[in-house]
Image (cartoon, rainbow, N blue to C red; front, side, top):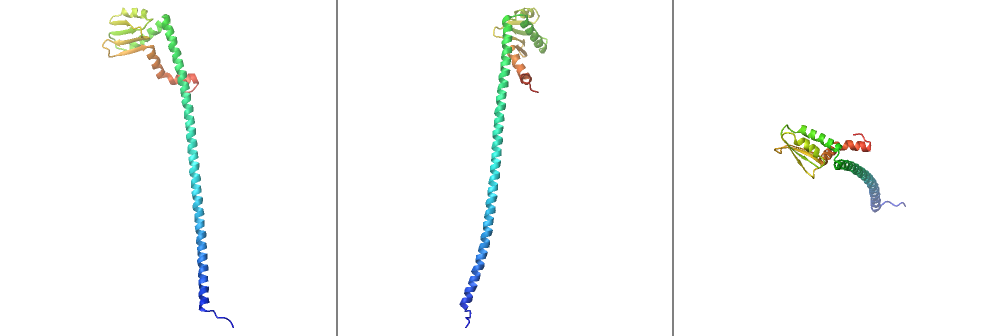
Length: 196
């Protein structure tokens, strides 16, 4: 005789069916969560790689920029050293001219005097002359309203109005400093063959 399903069997089948449905749903949710976790992980890994690449690029650029800056500073130091040497040589040559107290030095100082004189108003002047310019001093002493004095420490000459308000410094160190300030870029271009 066939067995009739009992209520208990039906309940067990229903429970088994629900358990199976819950398992399928849990497996589907698990797969969905696993897929989301994988996607999230991949996104984080991609983001981390992107940030790492950006950081490497940034550090590479910084290192390159630093190296270029150091190279540029080294070149500037070299240029400054060469220009320093050039001005030192010019100063030494002018000092040699002064020691000789020859006509070339007096002629140079006369031209500097004339240029300074043009810059100052037509009034009485006080002229200070360094060693080697005695002949120029004698010429100037004969001019009216001109006071001439010598200064053993001065390398060149200075002109000052008697009231002391205006002054033209024709000393060699001052002129070399001015020339350097105005023409250093041109000198570097000449020395290093660069366009200014």
